[in-house]
Amino acid sequence: MTAAVDHLSLLQPVHIGQFLILKSSVNRAFHTSMEVGVKVWCEDLQSRDVRHIMSAYLTFVALDESGKPIAVVPVIPETQDEKRRYERAERHREERLHKRLSRGRVADAAP
Image (cartoon, rainbow, N blue to C red):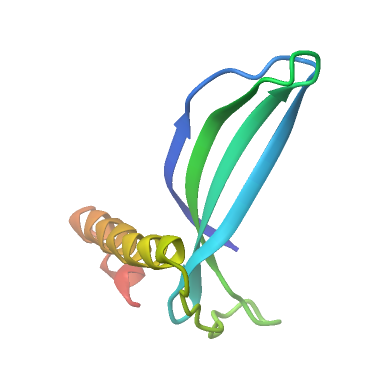
C-alpha cells in the first residue's frame, strides 16, 4: 500500500514520442514500511538526448492478507551511495512523522 509521497519534483516536461526511463531503489526498510526513491529520465528517440525530468520519494507499507501491517525485511546498505540514501531516508521519515504530529494525526506516528 502506498502510504506517502514525501517529495515529488517535476523538473521538465515530457513530449509525445519520448521514451521514459524509471529507476528505483529501496532506500530503507523500517518495521512495516519502506522508502523507495524513484528517478525518471526522458530520452528523445530521434536526438538520443536524455534528460532527468523527475525525482520522488514514496513510502509503502507492507500488508498481510487481512490488510494489517506486517514486518518487512531490513535493508543493509553496502555502497557509499546506498549508505547516503539509507541515512537520508531516516531524515525523510522523521520529517513525515513530525508533519503528522503537527497536524494532530498522532495515531499515524507510531513506528
